[in-house]
Image (tube, rainbow, N blue to C red):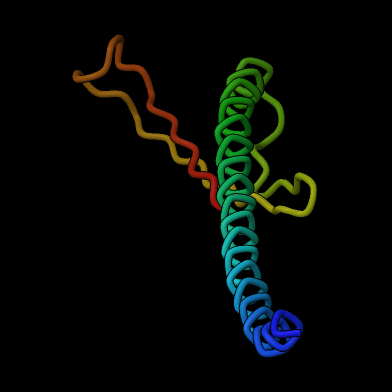
Length: 111
């Protein structure tokens, strides 16, 4: 009989322990989810940067071909997916500091 009474008195401690464990596990789960959201944002930023770099490289080759053909102009913006990339092209006339007095062409891509 004494064991039955002992179990009745300890049952409240088990409930409190379970509630504390559930709270601790919930806090850990929220922290892990927060880290995942942060990683997704970082990965998205890296993807946009890579797209901008590839866009600038492609525009440089297209610009070179336009100069050879003597046609067309460089676009001022391009939309890829849901991101719009603004394009700013600048050209500096060559000087003695550049090989063969070559013009310097720079593309600034912002998104």
